[in-house]
Image (cartoon, rainbow over all chains, first blue to last red; front, side, top):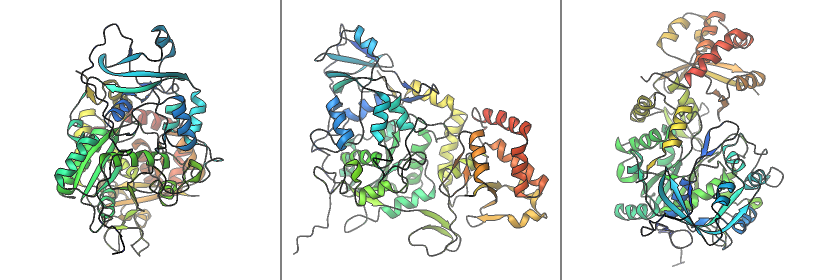
Length: 448
Length: 116
């Protein structure tokens, strides 16, 4: 025996324990300072770009474990400098509860107090206030993502307000309340979100029930075309002594951009892949995480690694241009991070090969396209022909907008039906201003 | 760098192209399940399109995507009139009145597209 261990199993939660900040006993808001959660608005466009309730949900249900709080100045400084929390665990982004300073001042809130939070006018959560601190949103936005000079191994050009993640930090109020956050009144997800809600404790139970010892995570914010489907099938072959037993689709649900597919169609489109047997349901399940994406490419991939390890996944697929918007990042910077590390962000080695690193394994994939010679969807690194017919999400969106049903070889008819179902509901196949405003007004949940 | 706009051809559009010199430009995609004509777009033209229609982007294949449906319909009509891919795009980009009409129609596209 040489001691080589081939069999792998669901990793422990990151940091060793899942955060579970649900305080069912605490109900009393009377006489205490109360703050109403409102969407963050882009000052230029007037569009909602973030709602901090999503961060509260993801912290309190353990998606971001070991993070159990809104960050202090020390936390944020550590994240910006090392991409780690002060205790050494990786965390890529500042998680900040930014508030209206004047309103907070008028409450005479002080450190050590409990601040109650209302969502849609109903009791929702509280923060045990450790610190209140000021920051410069413009400076924070730049430092969160870095600059091409300092981060030349990842960034091609400086981020600006056209970048949705930069815009989130740039539009913050400049006043932060830090401390542990607890949910006191668990919101109920609306249809269709409710059946895809698998917070880490529940996803781990589900994996156990399904005997999914190895699970590969698929990050999505798109309705799946057959390129995505093949990516999932092929990437799943990276397991241990056998392919991964399960594929977890984990959609990021949050504030949308005009032209995106609507979240409802994304979830039901992925569900159609298993419901109609393109990947058997015993091997494939759909879930989501609430998060207003920062589109930080390699930085975002670190958060994805944390979330999916917490959910119990052993592997994570990373494609070209993972979780990016525009052409700010080198399209291969995420894969580089997970192969060799990105020193400029504090990773001299990949995130699984550093102290207090992640235990989830990367599966870096290239491209799938249609090859007319093979007469099927093929993989760029194995197909030896040179007549690739590529299709992207935006290509498919173009067909749909023009009233052309995409051919089944690139888009499953049942996935298209999921789009049409929600198209009839919203009068539009994609996110438009009306959908955006309505979604951010009504959110994905009801609060009792 | 040159980019492309892929103009999808359904049965109605194909009818008007068959028998013309444009027919040889038709590309079969995805095992013949989709037919398309690719119109070349210069760097300068791509910039103009991105200014006119803020959602327009270049995808990983080098295609100019997310142009409004009204624009693609106008490009198809121009193609039929001019019988030349190069002239078809140039003619649209020179015609301010037409561009304004397209922009007007495009703004309504953001509100409602009838479902199939």
